[in-house]
Amino acid sequence: MTNQTDARREQARGNGVVQAGQFGHQAHSAPGAFDNSWWGQEEEEPADTIAATSIDVSVRRFGLPSSRHWKEQSYSTPGVLSVEVPIVERADVPAVATITDRHGKTRSLLIHDGNLIESTGKTLEEAVLADSRVRERSWGQDESDPPSIDKEHLEALQQDTADRWMVVDGLVHRPVEEPVLVAQSWGVQLESARYARAVDERGFITGDTVFTLDEWDQAKGAAEVSRRTYDDGSRTADEGIAFEAGEALAGFQTKYRRPPALDYDAWPHYDRWADRHEIHVRELARMRRGIASVPDAVSRVDDGLGGTRVVIDWSKFSEQQEQDYRRLVEYSGEG
Image 1 (spheres, rainbow, N blue to C red):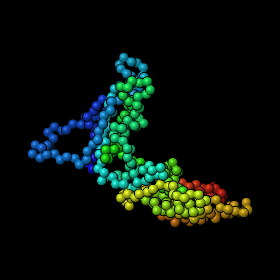
Image 2: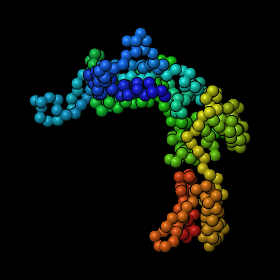
Image 3: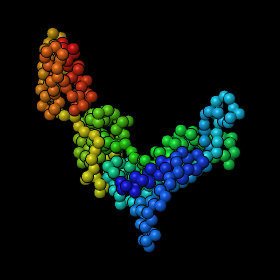
Image 4: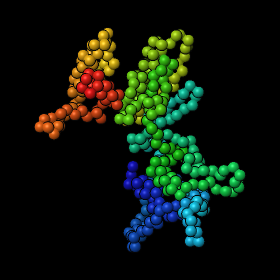
């Protein structure tokens, strides 16, 4: 992002011309500011430009409508929702992948400044009006009534659009959460990592059937193995997504990671109830050897009693691995 773009984002946050309903301040040039055109040199046009729109709105407020009122209440005033969004050249947002589902619906995931973005399919004005913070006129209102927005939402929307939106090829693009590829017996599915519970809060992948966008070949292979293992022969075609790699896929850096491989059984089998303690002690010892092999995962700290105690840095392990460890500690008799 250039300094010019940063400056324009500041302007879009309100550091420019204030209109009714726009919250910011007027920026002024210093007296006697240097002007290149005075020397016969034309000012250089900025490499990036700004898309802007202004929409008449009814601004919903809460407070004292006027000095004649003594009780706070909800009321509305006319205003203008003015937003400014950077225009980004298509060459600056290369495609990571184009994904087509079995119904023929296509998604194109692009990348900008290391973040995945996706087109909303809407122009700037359409995208603003479609934002959940902007309410279209309700049933029974006059056709001439403008959409409405809370005062706080107006300010937040102006900042969000300036910071997070961009216009590419005339359409608004916004950052999206990185999805994952999930291998199924019927093909590969594109899923929201959060919805599929495929990644824990620490960013660790939770299952063997979950893959990142740059692991299409592995996901496809896992789906084929699953099909051969579980399919009863009734499926004749791959019903998963079609995946077309984009030019930016080779340099794509996923935000997810796999937990370190640890050799242990969190739910060990035992034939006799009397053996359960010994078996859990064994599995806990195996797990601890694996944990100790991870660089900087284990340290010793003062226990306050003249000795030291072991501390595990659980940020290096998945939430499931931590839960397994605590379970083994409890069932081994240390808990």
